[in-house]
Figure 1 (cartoon, rainbow, N blue to C red):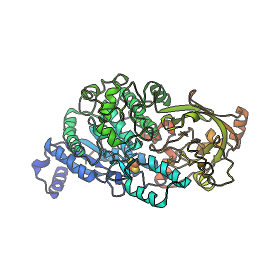
Figure 2 (cartoon, rainbow, N blue to C red):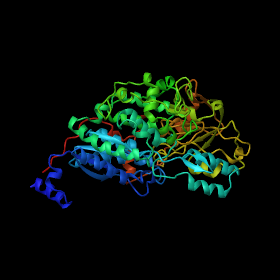
Figure 3 (cartoon, protein in one colour):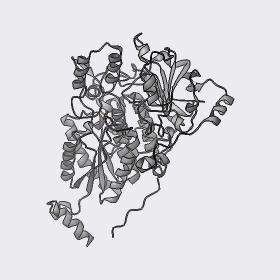
Figure 4 (cartoon, protein in one colour):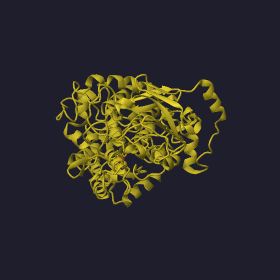
Length: 555
Ligand code: FES
């Protein structure tokens, strides 16, 4: 009776029995949405995937999934990454499918889709949406986010007119695709490739390029072979694969957000990835990608320069080449023949952009469980700095006071933002690159030390210490900092400390009053109860487990 029911519903769609009988059923998990402009082309690409699936003897079914859009989602898209992961996992579990092509790209969609696929552990391949084309304003290339931040500072300083600002608005996002700077989207799709979860070179192809269509078709063809070979994510995602991803993250000057996502992905595989591991790898990996915000070029340039395979080939000795990838070959085999076409965009090893990694982790009495800083996007002279704190209790407090003439701020001040972490934000918003106070902008100052438990857009830059853990909302030491406290950032020693005595710290801790929870019902309440801290990946504690979930019965 159940078979009748399933077959009759296939026939309802106009299929013949031979169209589906005996064929692997492939779920195309599509995060297309009209409000997620980064994914505007994913409906067309799903059709290309379907062609590939049909050609290889499979049966495709397109399944929509939560389209987490970085631009529009409030209070922070990070609040919803785990919801997409749950939706992906349960779609793949509850529906009669044999394998999946996962379509995403805008920041949180890559980790969300992969986390769900790892936990379900069906054969799966990741199809990155691809970066958009370079922006353009008066003949100069504009980069998503990075140039918005840069020119907004100029606009605030009065050096850009209203008319010019409006012109830029029409030139910075010219095509479908995700942000074409080395933001979180470009970083996470590159790391999906470094992990072995995409076809070789897939992450660098610009979204509108016809090669992107062919890559989509190839995903459709390949997933059928993966199903017959029973090649599953947890077979590919070993500790060595994660070490490759960390090394590539450093070499591309990747977004700080990648640290949180990689920790969460690894934990889904039952692997512990302490922050110290990022630091060890960072020390031996140079930054080779000359892409904004750390460098000069954009993702379209990176593609023409050889893309991620060329970059990985240049750092072969720093990678585990024996790692398996979704095409059934090793990373080493996939990199054969890859070469740099433009050594200005992808640097050779003897001429790196920076000699060592783009991101480092910090510890100290201000961050007992760690914090991160993207040194490649910071002013070098601020990486060793001591200055007095100016504390903002919340984003609203910061917004109300940051540009006041009576703010007691100097270039040496350290701007501190509290209550912007996983629970405090909530959802750990990208508030970590606090604006430079207007009072100082006129003098030409463009960077200061800023500290928060928030995240920062991967497209942003500045000396911003982020992800301070534990967060202030749950009484972490950041909650105890007061105006005028001297704070030392010492990147060389990996230190972040507030210069007060342990006794003073204990006294302030005893007097600290916990704020009321942000949610009393709904998804927000579930999130508040179960989300972990930044150094643990901000996953839900009950999703981290690797134990098998039983295959549902069909009655
Ligand atoms: Fe989608 Fe930047 S807004 S990747």
